[in-house]
Length: 79
Image 1 (cartoon, one colour):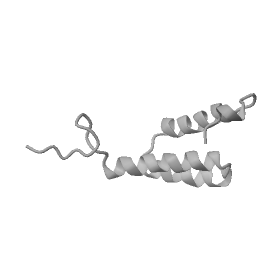
Image 2 (tube, rainbow, N blue to C red):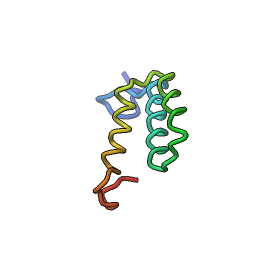
Image 3 (cartoon, rainbow, N blue to C red):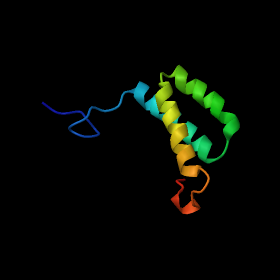
């Protein structure tokens, strides 16, 4: 029987809903990095509509704040 998994033999391919949720989180992360804070509320609302959990949204924001907080050198910041 042929395995149709395109990612790995160990994990199933992501479904369209999971891809949309991950993309919503990526857009939020990109808006934070680009300092487009005015877009964040809409991106968060859209992410929630797609089923993203509050904990995942909080993690993206926390990761951004930890990487860009006071006392962090620009070399240690992600882009």
